[in-house]
Amino acid sequence: MNKVLLIGSGGREHAIAEALKRGSAKIYAVMKHKNPGIARISQDYIIGDENSVSFVKNLDWVKFRKVDFAFIGPETPLINGMADMLEDKGIPVVGPVKDAAIIEGSKEFMRDLMKKHGIEGLIDYYVFTDSSKVEEFLKNYEKPFVVKPVGVTGGKGVRVMGVHFKTREEGIEYAKEVIDKKIGGVGKVIIEEKVEGEEYTLQVFTDGRTVKGMPLVQDFKRAFEGDTGPNTGGMGSYSMENHLLPFLTKEDYTKSMKIVEDIVAAMRREGRIYRGILYGQFMLTAEGPKIIEVNCRFGDPEAMNVLSILKTSLVDIAWGIIEGNIPKPEFYNKATVVKYVVPEGYGTPNPAANQQIKINEEKIKREGALLYYASVNEENGKIFTTTSRSLAVVGVADNLYEAEEIAERALKHITGRVYMRHDIAKREMIERKIERMRKLRGE
Image (cartoon, rainbow, N blue to C red; front, side, top):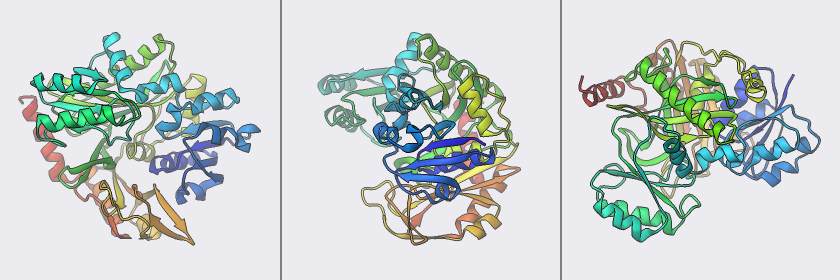
């Protein structure tokens, strides 16, 4: 039986833990806060800074090599070099080393890599370190644009013209702010052309040479129904029983896979062997798939969609990533719908933290739904909100609308000062997306 060091404490990591457990792994977790779901199925766990290389380096599990391999969930420890440290200690890791995790750590690096190697799906981009120069550029840039910090902001730093700001002047002010305040940890900003279409996520397993795709997922970052409100870490997501999406063809999937395969190959040619999970955030446009960003780990919530229907042992896949012989991952032909439960006011400066949430796990299970904990505090058997996403329910069924109904029924068994988006994966929302892509493609 494999002993696995799991780094991370969110809903994504709870989904990873459950999948590892199905593969008969014994889990030893490092969490910045006690995730009740992970804690229950772990042999042991430690509460501490999951992002700190030095903190993990000094754990007895690492010093005395009591684990067979490590599985790193979030991006920050990977970008900080956690995989490098563990491998130096003789512990194999599912997750890229620092010079490969830069694919997420620097949006500039990712765009430059695609440009240098002539990879399809690249959009126009411009990088600035001088706030006066970005202002001068944008005053003369006639297209709609997107402002992105070069560094990592947890999916919350991107602002899109016509969505997050209305006027060119507002966009200029935010671009200058990114540089001056070093949002994302770097005094650099990327200006990208705004592309129109439908976003989707393609996650893959890779050993640096072979790339194995997973079912496609579409997630929803806006806080409020109707895709309004501030950007968040993700309010929910869905996947289809055919592993495609309603507005997307098998050919679109193949093109998307080719782009990800080319990125992994380009990294290898640069001497940056990428091992772990990689995901491309794509926009399906009238011209085909375009890359919005590339991330060095599972998505959250997208991990819950794919891992909930993973038939192959995640432990076997993990060893395949480490040893260079990934088995073909098989997934059940089921649709999934994830709906996150968040504190009231999530996405604003004052979310309702430290409020009790009542969760009837037995009734949620009886509805046929899965439950994944994310950022909560547990005290004397009671669950309390933090400022971040609290927990998620997942409906799994033979078709999308059955899965959505299961998730909705499960939400009724969660009460407190919480909020959730009920519109995710509703029939009318999906039909609007299909129609939008038809119009964009001139069909």
